[in-house]
Each structure stands twice: as structure tokens, then as C-alpha cells.
Image (tube, rainbow, N blue to C red):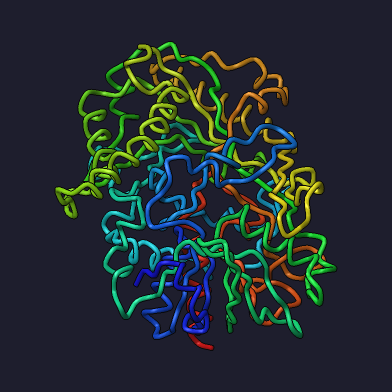
Length: 520
């Protein structure tokens, strides 16, 4: 059930619940729905409205103080559905080696094992409406292409699944309008956490009318994205009686994924190249193909995750299907009504999504509208470093200060880029596909290549999970150290980042938290 936040001007106590969740994005909504299924009363506080603003960037206060990070402003949205109103819907689970502390030098330790989280990946796919036959990308690859996924000795061809409807405000429409589901309170921005004896006993909320109200809470989960969750935690450090005052890890180890063009490809067998790397469409779902290293290769060299993408001009059929998927996001035909409201929503989403889609195509050189060449793209895992962090803008009072991001790199990512590019080039030459003219900076492991890459809007870290408050912000169950009822759910808690879009893994951890809260 969706409630306009202006009703908070009346009696805020009517919104008391077993669990209060801040943020109605990917993590907040899936967590809220699962808790409602478990019989818990849930209130979700969303800062934005039911429909996004075209100038949504204006709501994303933030200051870049390190390397440029576009996602700080452009890669998040305050609205029902959160940033799922922007993303493409890519679902990739982290793998077993991503949870191992010695997978590569500099990797942070996860306090939760892959075995513990694996069942919740299946649960995440289920709540998102992805059937078992679609989850197994290896099976789909063999079924559609009729070939094994091995790509030479050290590489494999892996596929990433994309949701047909990535906008969670549409995907979960039934739950959002169900009187027995979670209550979603829009236009209600949480400004402060108020503590009493190690507990968050109330929230200070700014309503749409500019009024401030307090809402008491029993169990509180911050699921409002990495930047906003960390901003609330940093404000809480300054709050009277806060149990977070001595935690120096809040905001530390911010990470993202690095995307860059590694070199041009001289193609010798265009037909086979397309057969291997064109998008795969199966049962109304899209799968994109990427070149990944085998576990043996990565473990032998002790390198961070790095995958290759072959960016070729899309086929006419692929471009048509991608266009139809984008149109479906802009205009939901199943709910379309000939009304001014529907036309206005469609117009707003077109103005938001079309520029993003065009920029995606340009940066990956993936459309024949641009050129006829092929390029090797890289997606690189950022190694956590203490030089990359978030803090509050010191020039303003903590209650009003925007987040300030100092994005920095470790530098050892270049070794992974070097080894992976050389392995891909060797296989291209051996198989007669062509040859790759690798950027000399990669071959020299020159860190200036990293500064020419761009971020992926995959905001992680800042409230990392760990064994104790000396090294982390939340424990293995996502509870903030030193508190009794405060949790953080989302990629902010990730100690490291794999190579994959973090959303599915964040949802899985949220569902694991739901199981724990459901037993209280």
C-alpha cells in the first residue's frame, strides 16, 4: 500500500511497525515484501515520490573530491523503485572465490561464506520472477549455442541475465498496492537517527511540506543506497548518545567497478565473432556474453576479477529487441491507459532513459550507427583501499551536509587487466578470430589507464561487514556494531566487489536478513 508522505503531518504513530525500512529501491522493496510474507508489519520510508523527476540529479547532493565518479550524481534516483528506474536489470551472483579472503592480494575478508549465502540467490531469483531454467546461464548457453563454454585453456564464455522488467515499481506492482503488503510512505526523507541506550528509538523525518516529524521504530534497516545510508551513519556519529561515535570505519573502503576500452580488434572471422558474442535471447530474457577467467587461472596468478567484453556493431535483430525492451520500460503496455497522467509518466521516463541508453552505446562502441569496428572492453574489480572513502562535507553542519566522495584506486588492478588482456589476445590469435591491439598502458601496467576508465554506478563499501567494530561497521548479520536494532542492507556492506553487478548479491543478503528479522 502506497501512502503519500504528507499524511505524516497528522499522526506519525500510525506508521509504527515491526520493521521500518529506509529506501524503496531494489533492496528495500524485496526485503519489505519478504518480511510481509513472513507476517511482519513493515513500513518503508521513501524520500522520493511515486514518479521520478526528470531533473532527478538535482536531488543527489554530493561532492567529488577524488577521481571523477559520475554515479555519485547520475547513478541513483530518489523515487519509488529507487535506482531500478535507471538500471538495465543485470543479474549476476557473486561466486565462491569472491568470498575467500586470499583470492588476491589486498582482498578484504567476508564474514559470511558462499555456502551460507548460496540458498538466498535462489530465493532472490524466485522473488524476481526468474524461473530455475533461466537462472542456469551455463545450461542456457549450451542449449542455445550448442557449444561448450570453454574458450581456450584459461578462459570461459559466461553469460549475464537481464530482467525483462528491471523497474521494481512495475515488477512489484501487485505488492505495492496490496492492503496486506508493506506500507510505502513516499516523500518522507529520514534526516536523523535518534538513539537511546544503544537503540535507535526514533527517526527524524522531513516531509514534503517541509515539516519535521518523529517516528518511533522497533527494528530499523537502512536500505537507501550506499551514499545515503553512509550519510545517515556519518550523521549518527555526531548524534548525542550515539553508540557509533567510536567507529572509525564508517565511510571507508568505497569501491566501484571500472569500465574501459582495452584496445581495438582486427577481426579475421566476423561471422564466428558474432556467433560467439552477440546477445542471446531465450524465453523473453536477454543474456549478454562476457569472457571470464577460469578459477585456476585467477588463483594461480592471484589477481582480482577482470572480464572482457567484445563490443561489435549490434545485429539488426538484437538492436530491435533491445529497443523493444527499452520501450517496454518507458510505456508499460499492460497498465497503459489513455490519460494525461500515463502520457506524462511515459514522457518523463523517455527523457530520463533515452540519454542513458545512448551514452551506454557510445562508451561501449556497440552500435553500427557509430562505426564498423570491434573493441575489447574491460570490467575490472576495484581492490579496496583506505584512500577511497566517503565523509560529510566539512563546510556544513552534519545535519545538512551532503556526502563528499574521495574516489581512489589501489593500482594493483592493472596486473589483472594485463594478464586478462594477454590471455584473450592469445586465444583470439590461436582460434583465428583476429588480434587485439592492447593499449600500451595495460601492457606496461601504467595506472594512468585507470583514470581513463569510468565507474559503473555500482556503489559499494562504506559500511563494510566484518568480525568486529575494529575492522568493520556491521556484523555478519548486517547489524551495526554497538547497536541493538540498527541494520544496513545493500552493497554498502560489501568488503569487496567481484566483477559483477552487485544488485543480486545485495538482494540475497537482504533476504537473509529478512529471515533473521522474521524470527524476532
